[in-house]
Figure 1 (cartoon, rainbow, N blue to C red):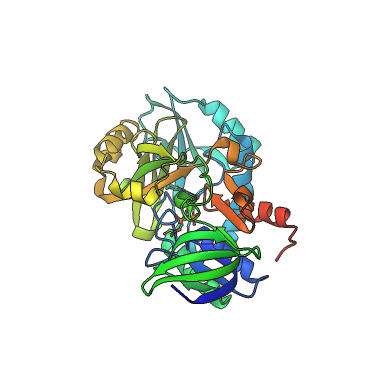
Figure 2 (cartoon, helix red, strand yellow):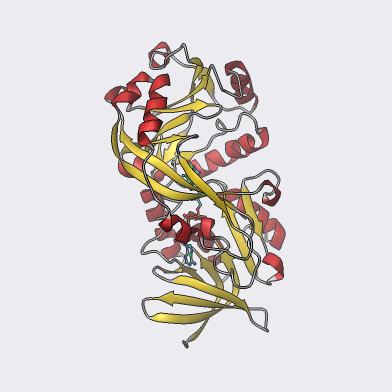
Length: 376
Ligand SMILES: Cc1cc2nc3c(=O)[nH]c(=O)nc-3n(C[C@H](O)[C@H](O)[C@H](O)COP(=O)(O)OP(=O)(O)OC[C@H]3O[C@@H](n4cnc5c(N)ncnc54)[C@H](O)[C@@H]3O)c2cc1C
């Protein structure tokens, strides 16, 4: 292995976070490289997700998180307009039994945070079994098309002259005496090494993997998750529906495939594990080894109790992914993000993770404060 290339910044992972950060940092640092182990950008969590652009409605019991979503929502919309699907009516409904919030409480909290909410029209209300559903509300929430998001971000990093290398896995990061980091890469041409001034690890569920040999892993919780993709009956095509507030379902537009995704709090997770201890195994390795048997029938059967037309959904396959949950102790100001500069004392090695797509703005905020950057 030889070839001692150098760069100012090396970013691990070309998901949404890696590319966004890559472009951002290129305004300040001349040589930025993004290494991606897969064949293309935005193919993992940034593709395999519910595509919801959060606007606060999901967090009736965490006002701070709801308010952060409200702040990020217009910013994300303005920045990524061509990737936004606003062409459906988003409906939030509250179950009569098993909900942690009543319809009245839900309505009041959303009013308080300024999220647009109105009791649903009769036409929408009729879609629900009102014996099981206490309240139905029309809201303003959108979905993003992750394929368009990828195209926008790839164009932006191209213009910023960020060097994005796919099929290039970071296999190790080690300190060097001068404070820079030796990053070992494995690609089509075998192993090479880059000497990087700073490294930002944006690998989401694999956050602990690149430096696993030298640093103690953060005790992240991972879930094997399944999102079913369905063609909904025509009567439901223009709606996104989320039943709150507990073990219920969500059926959202999934613009990248022109279908809806169906998820269920009880059936979407298929098991979980934690990083930590001496026997660390990368999340993708565990994910690949786990059996993936669809729970679609359970999801749709339960959803149809509340919205009988759901019975007529046609199943078109499932998206499987590792969902990584941040330990409460690791998050920042109740924002669902993790930013660990100089992790475990490894100078210039930084961990970055956002629990949602739009929390990238919170990451930049916190990072700019930490490093004393003004707007780059
Ligand atoms: C089931 C599910 C539903 C979700 N729903 C929503 C939602 O509705 N709305 C929302 O805002 N958020 C949602 N999220 C969260 C959102 O998907 C993530 O916050 C976001 O995609 C994280 O982006 P990322 O770039 O950090 O991760 P990723 O997109 O996973 O990118 C990480 C990249 O790192 C690469 N990589 C890993 N290891 C290495 C290595 N050693 N070397 C090089 N490259 C490597 C991977 O191949 C990958 O491309 C959901 C997540 C899941 C799993």
